[in-house]
Length: 142
Image (cartoon, rainbow, N blue to C red; front, side, top):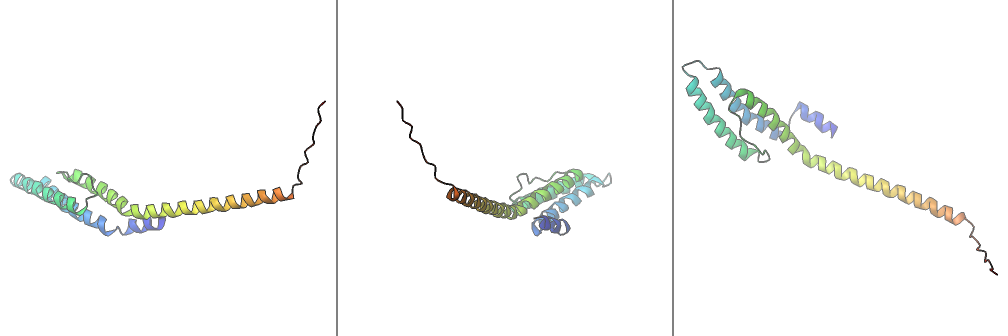
């Protein structure tokens, strides 16, 4: 799993890239609206709000595992949301692999336990075979 984590840090999975692209469109629209001049700021804010709504809807369809798919309307909020959504998406992609690794690790642990139990049982049986049977004395009571 550590090798996969390292690979995913350098090249994220396709699902993460798709989520990031969708949010990047909304981030760019918000950034343009925030940096716009006095005369065009209102028009660009309305356009950014429409873009954010459209991208949020697209994100809901693309990534149904995200519980909150509403992209914030500010550049800082959208950028923070991008990081959070990327992390959640990576966890979603990693989950089947992690479950399989956990299942196989549990199976190996069970096999090791069974092997140790069998060895211990064999030692106890060998010890029992080498013991001399105990003779019980019958005590007579008067």
